[in-house]
Image 1 (cartoon, rainbow, N blue to C red):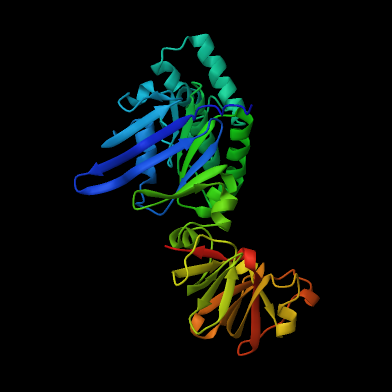
Image 2 (image 1 turned 90 degrees about the vertical axis):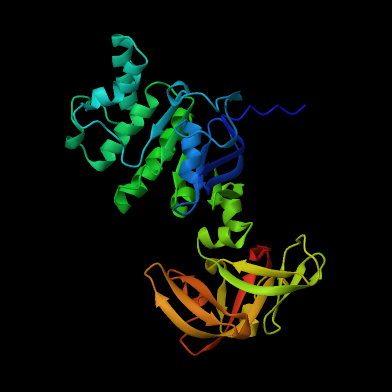
Length: 371
């Protein structure tokens, strides 16, 4: 017999939130596993922060239910939810020491003095800030302040920690370092983290799973690889990384799908639930494409497993780590081919603007989008 999976740590059932005539969250249903690093990802105004505030208890949903460890908490006040919260700007009290900032939730819960000191000390050790209990927030760097805010969210042993763009105020280098620290800490302590961000690279780096949101709706839920490799819509494919989009129409459906692009060129995709005559858009990641100087070079590899299209180089851009070639495929449109600059010379075609080339990619790298 297979083991019964544990109940989710957080569950939203058909949750909506309206502010007057504006719908901020529309019928969101999610199940977040215990011990999972789960991200809500989307552009500004997509509803991700409102969703987080509903889980925290700072907003009451207009419809739907919220569950914590399968106990409904929809109407429960925020301070009774046993949920930790880390804000973008930390919300530390400037007139209180590090110790007092971290101890604040414990004082609200009337924790005994000896237990309080022990918990604060342990929280500081967890976030790797031992010995800083007596400092004031103004004496700390941005990264240290962020860790104090995290320690304050962890000190009362919450069931779930919510993080609302907590790295947004840090510079790029420190932000990337803190991404790894946060993920490592979350894995070590085994708590459920629900993380809000508009930064797709951040979500891909840190998440076990993620939900992509737009206009109050959840468009796709999955692990980072599946969302990046198999986006469910054009919005997801465009928001997560960079994609080439080519419109077409389904010509044949069998073991593989055959799609005719504008101008008559044909590409193939893996088996899909498609209908002959259906209008679709194919998406191909630039790093999955290759350049060749002759058709014979373009078909090197397993027989019949490559899409190959002729084109002309219109522009190339050197970015340091790679070179981006913009290739016009005639009526089908323009695609970007990204070639790493550390590719050995024998594996890299040295193309120039105006040169005729062939663009190829594996059939399995073709994503077919219906929306």
